[in-house]
Length: 160
Image 1 (cartoon, rainbow, N blue to C red):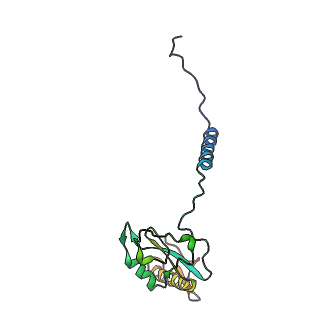
Image 2: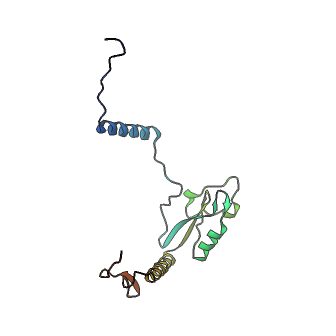
Image 3: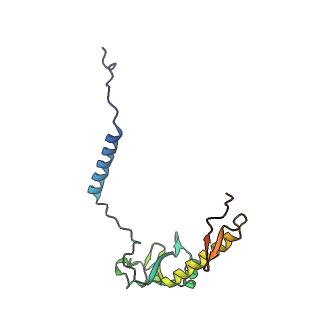
């Protein structure tokens, strides 16, 4: 036989071999780089009775003041940096002086409001959505009011 005309016959790797190699590679990467990353937006200890929300203050450096103003009208307020000193990303260049003393991160500002306000807003939105759905053609008798709330009537004939 001539050199080069001989073919080396290899067995194709099985799925288990491929998966094992992939898992070994992932383990090696995790061990090498210690990927215990935590998002700077994670808030661990929210005070009882409050809910938090990261509000968009700007997008790609362009201020979006209407968004924050609308949230303030709905009961949201800024979280003081003294509540969460671990989240206080100090702005050494003083680019966002208006947010000094509050928690700000890359165009987002942390806001808070009492849970009661949130419950009221969610109930209002749910009721509004049910009223809109109730007026949609083809859903007559599908959504029924029960004790001031709207529920789906399971016995209704469904047209879809």
